[in-house]
Length: 578
Image 1 (cartoon, one colour):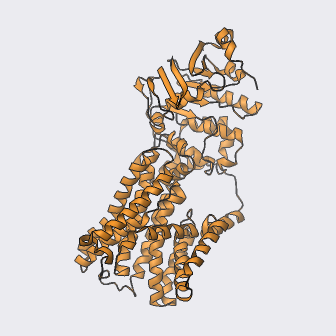
Image 2 (cartoon, one colour):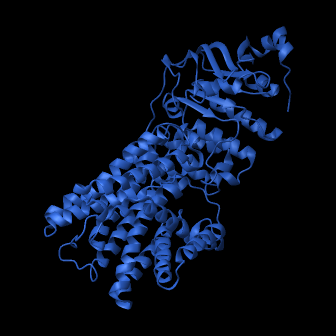
Image 3 (cartoon, helix red, strand yellow):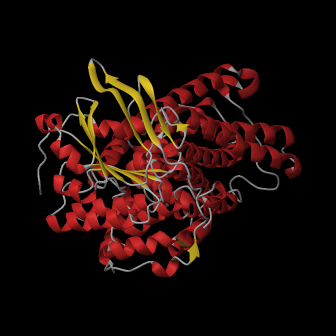
């Protein structure tokens, strides 16, 4: 990809010498739109949320640049602070919008798209009405070019390096831990939260960066066009930017640029020869998206990938640096105090009370619908608690979110294997190692990729398939994905481990392997483990203590022998074996 990017930039620099100045002028405009598209692709293709108002930030950058050029057009010293503001203001504004929207809930992508659309419409109305600031309907006119740079002859040679800079920045982000975390969030945001990452902040940061990129392009748009009108912040341009990104390939680095150039020149040619040229452009868009969902560049990339023969490799050679230690939790008492959870008219947990103050293995059993998984959901913020209090280590955890629970030393494995299917085994392990260790300054460094931990070798010894590092998690069997998620959860080094039916869907051999793993990692006596399980053979093998639930209440507790002999338990629960 690096060689392709270098060749592309060199090829673009040759264009003015093989074409005319007007062609370079047109291409320069489309390259600016492509830069904005790269920011959209960062959000949409990598992080999984679609901004529908990116023209707002492009237009803000253009207006700031246009004002500065009209006022201080002959001095680079005076212009540079305004050009920086053209980048910073859109980035900060977008970061604030993202933080407000994404903090509301996990999976707020559709609402985010609608809100950015609405904000863009508001921006368009303000640009029309604030005539003293924006020039109103007519916009800012007679904007001079950059000092000493001719719009038609030499500005193009500023735009191409700007594209190279944007490409380099986005490529670096995609390869950084931050880029990998965005990919993880896109695939499984809840799982990312339960590795201790505040996903709302990471998505807001990505949105802020994409808006800053748009402002950067807008700052060059003003001297390129010599005019900035409200259309530069409007929804129509925002929609076109999304279309160009989709056509070129939202999951690729060069896709947005290719889409903007192809559609831009196609529209330019058709506009002069065909009255209904918009229909043709729309049909091209529909055809490309239906035939090539990953866009033009994505389709080409998939072909070249298939031509390469995949090689299974281990990644131990790159993990040579001991990861920073994570904060340990000393107090480990778990207390449920009269917990009530109700959804509509249905009582899910009805005055549930119990406490666990020993570092051992407790199995939570009960018939279907007893409320077992709801215990974990209430504890980790997935279900709202109407009354009562949950304490862990002397701290109330009632109402806390998943990332906060992980930071308190609580690790959770879900009933259905919850991993990052489109990431490799190695990339899944990266994210587990980074849990509660990755600082903000580490997000954009390469050193976290070399981190290892003492527990990683133990995990790989227990599950040897994890050493085949470049295999995608989604290509693993059900049992292997269960084991991968268990291994990742263990690598967060939790003080409290919550396992929801860890043997579900496993063969008999895999069940024994999972039981052995649970025993091995609990042998040190430094972890409290709570397991939801239906298989009584698993319970008998693992449990130091058993809690029995029925209809959202605690029915009985004690040793396996005590539970088996309890008449109340015998009346409501008859376990099975695998």
